[in-house]
Image (cartoon, rainbow, N blue to C red):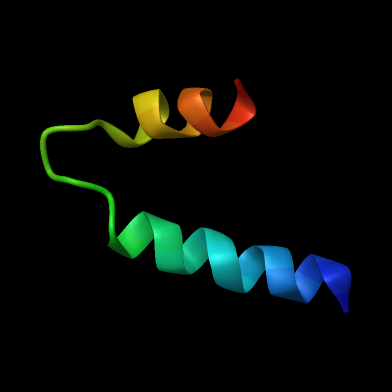
Amino acid sequence: MIADAVCIDHVHLSVTIPPKISVSDFIGYLKG
């Protein structure tokens, strides 16, 4: 259940990433 919620949040965040930020940079930001 927790994993599903995390996946949903991740997808939502992925959709809202500003175009000027690369996906790899955003993931790096999430990981700290």
